[in-house]
Image 1 (cartoon, protein in one colour):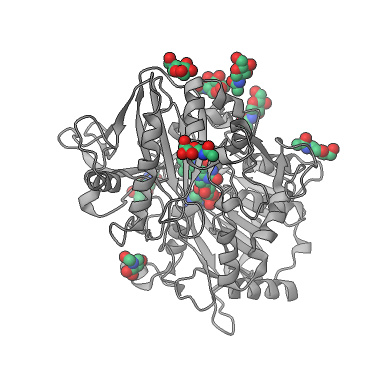
Image 2: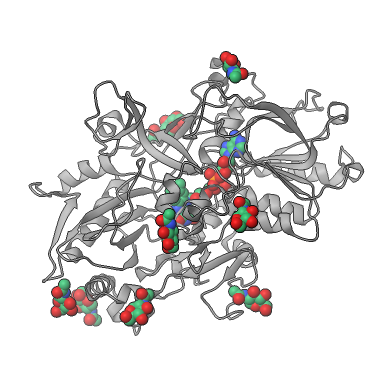
Length: 587
Ligand SMILES: Cc1cc2nc3c(=O)[nH]c(=O)nc-3n(C[C@H](O)[C@H](O)[C@H](O)COP(=O)(O)OP(=O)(O)OC[C@H]3O[C@@H](n4cnc5c(N)ncnc54)[C@H](O)[C@@H]3O)c2cc1C
Ligand SMILES: *[C@@H]1O[C@H](CO)[C@@H](O)[C@H](O)[C@H]1NC(C)=O
Ligand SMILES: *[C@@H]1O[C@H](CO)[C@@H](O)[C@H](O)[C@H]1NC(C)=O
Ligand SMILES: *[C@@H]1O[C@H](CO)[C@@H](O)[C@H](O)[C@H]1NC(C)=O
Ligand SMILES: *[C@@H]1O[C@H](CO)[C@@H](O)[C@H](O)[C@H]1NC(C)=O
Ligand SMILES: *[C@@H]1O[C@H](CO)[C@@H](O)[C@H](O)[C@H]1NC(C)=O
Ligand SMILES: *[C@@H]1O[C@H](CO)[C@@H](O)[C@H](O)[C@H]1NC(C)=O
Ligand SMILES: *[C@@H]1O[C@H](CO)[C@@H](O)[C@H](O)[C@H]1NC(C)=O
Ligand SMILES: *[C@@H]1O[C@H](CO)[C@@H](O)[C@H](O)[C@H]1NC(C)=O
């Protein structure tokens, strides 16, 4: 699972005079029920704290699009769960060549392509998110892969806090995992009794089609698999989340792991629901259909004049955010407020958390002043330094369909410290994100991949207006240093898989992307093509945790230490006197 540093714990206090008449008081308010907010809210409630978990979306537990992992393309397109964002990736020169550019036609429908009907409005590059209980974990591919150890250890070094080390994070993984693919209890570095089911795809699926077996075997051989004592099946079946110091350098063929069981998605939604349904009556209130519009701060300044968050303001009602395909500008929702005696925790995802912060007066001063938002804290890092994994694809058709699936770990010459490419190869048509993006088709085959350690993405999330219902202006900031090692690594990955596709003597492969018929497939031509056509879907980092002296850090360990001391020592609001709350799922 990808753990993004999007949790923003704002030290809060309660001002009794302001809240005493208000019923809507909780110890913690968590905004957003995705992987960031959902489990945290559930765990806090299980520990006995009263928690209000707010989400703009609703419980779609019975929706087979999100429930069945295999249906995730349907889930991405589902108007009951999706939020449509349109982003810019790169410089204008490359942006205008993106072949899945999305437009709004004069009749209101989407057009995808480069030749829109007269009068269409250019929306940009489609970037799906899910607004539903469980967040994007309800429409994603459910792949569960631990990050490279160095990623955790870097955070530990930056913050000087060793609770972030990979070794310590492994303990959290063990406590949340319910591993279904190893013998129960057989490996202490895995969990077997947690809330998140993990499974491994059946490697025999990759071996049931002789052509696919040939492709996987050649791939494996090229990456040195034939120099090991393992069979192809054994290589495909390797545990990708093993606690192995060599893991992050290992290359070769694999079968992906998912957070699922028997094809049914396992997610934060399950934990939220089981916490609500638990006979121990945990004090969790889940409020659906609620768009948080800003954080409220105490107007009583402390000695150091540090503003404290005391709650949130929101609009209640369905589909109130304009990214929602059912959005109706004439339905305004009902204004409401909720108060927190301990903390307000923002986990609205990579685009929405910085938007909420800025709407609340926390962000770059000049941007806030431009929109007439009173500045609570001039924090220039909010909504900057956004990073993503670049996606690209080698795609075409085989004369005869090739069934099955395998993934590849690969390390390019430009890799920084660990393997940097994760391919997913199979019979599908996934070349980017656009409304109505298709899923599987016979004869088509691709190796798509993610470049996992990009070095020059510098994205931003900026307000378009102070209207909380309007989506922000999102720039992914790809290739900020131009054509550099990021692009070279993408090109190298494409050039690595191409000859494998052409290795089946009796089943001809016709390449459509990057190099369609008639194209002179030079590296230079491909560089330009790839730069114009790369896409992405793993954005992160818009409210980054940083060192105490980093001016762009949004969350610093200093804040966390202060807030834990503050609450540990002197709760300002006597929660014992609060009425005991029972679990509720509000409509
Ligand atoms: C198409 C796609 C495929 C992916 N595939 C994978 C994968 O296979 N494996 C993997 O590990 N990761 C994958 N990811 C990434 C992963 O899903 C995200 O990193 C993760 O969901 C982020 O969690 P989050 O809690 O930060 O935010 P989100 O999951 O975005 O959740 C945010 C929640 O906050 C709510 N919210 C936002 N704003 C407000 C507001 N103002 N008021 C109230 N509620 C609000 C939203 O409704 C949403 O439910 C994928 C992502 C996408 C988009
Ligand atoms: C899901 O379906 C079951 C059975 O039809 C029903 O009892 C339950 O209320 C539904 N749950 C939700 C969240 O819609
Ligand atoms: C979802 O997946 C199930 C099981 O694979 C399948 O039977 C069903 O048709 C899919 N749902 C839709 C709406 O296609
Ligand atoms: C493993 O065994 C424990 C104890 O019996 C049980 O609670 C748990 O559900 C089992 N896990 C799996 C994945 O079967
Ligand atoms: C592979 O094929 C065998 C024999 O036809 C079949 O029993 C098995 O279920 C197949 N495996 C998968 C994962 O499809
Ligand atoms: C492994 O396969 C590669 C590619 O086919 C080949 O070049 C290499 O010699 C093989 N190595 C062994 C030990 O067979
Ligand atoms: C919704 O709000 C807008 C802007 O404040 C206002 O013009 C409009 O009349 C409101 N609509 C309803 C139905 O209240
Ligand atoms: C990255 O973005 C920041 C502002 O967000 C800007 O100051 C900086 O110059 C950018 N870096 C590059 C390499 O473009
Ligand atoms: C192609 O040849 C291989 C090896 O000779 C054979 O196993 C495979 O079935 C053939 N595929 C097709 C589609 O004829």
